[in-house]
Length: 309
Ligand SMILES: [Ca+2]
Ligand SMILES: [Ca+2]
Ligand SMILES: [Ca+2]
Ligand SMILES: [Ca+2]
Image (cartoon, rainbow, N blue to C red; front, top):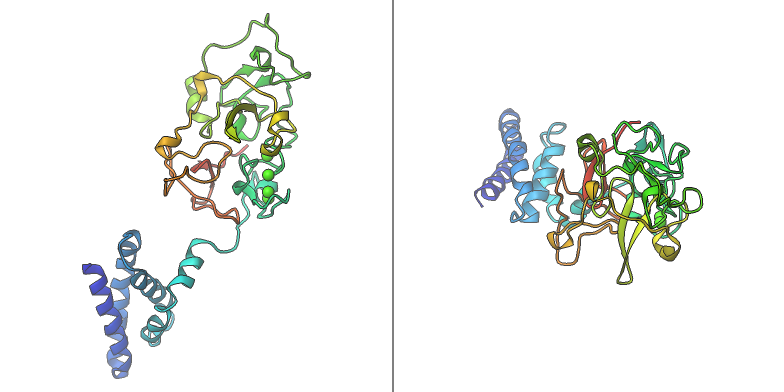
């Protein structure tokens, strides 16, 4: 309340300063400008602040440094366009996100599979290091070089094992490896536990385990699907290889706590904003833009660091 009063006063003062003699104008306007920008930060984060105040201030701030004289006038004009300014702030042109220097299908600002959803707004995009919008698999040559041995699915390089996650598809009675790596009931090397490094470094989205076994809900039915399956998509869920969750690195999803579960791109009904157990929460617009900081991407409502290879 006090802020908006002060700001209104400042706009007025700035406006008045314009009409003052030239010598006064410079000192007054510059002084007002500095404190205005300081207060912008406070008022923007306050949801109760009226849109008029926010718009007026931000315009004033950006115009301020260049032409001091016109600031007062422009502030008055743009105050009327509260909606236009709001839209520009929230969206804008899509900025491509690179994975190890290359822009792939899930970071290229295009709807590559024509389902109306762009990049990480497309549920079949697991991260910017995913080159297929049509299926959950990434289509990257480095992924799943070994049909049986699995490391952290979400590090963009399923071959190396730096994350110390270790599993073998032969251990899973659901047979996610299909014909290429069938379930072997006599296979001995099935770790009971995953290392601490694995659990802390592997960035697992809500609803998945670290090996890419994810629970999705389609038409009221739940499925545990293996993301390594080359042909698995939400549109053809029946054809997806099923899998058994590895309890030791399972990131259970809690929609009742407003978490966004894997396969969803928006918070559950009744939730304004998603929540995240680790890290910042985020939202993605239809263009594929998220509000995560640079170097991060938005998946299941949470900002994840883009892991370098
Ligand atoms: Ca794309
Ligand atoms: Ca798409
Ligand atoms: Ca898709
Ligand atoms: Ca994909």
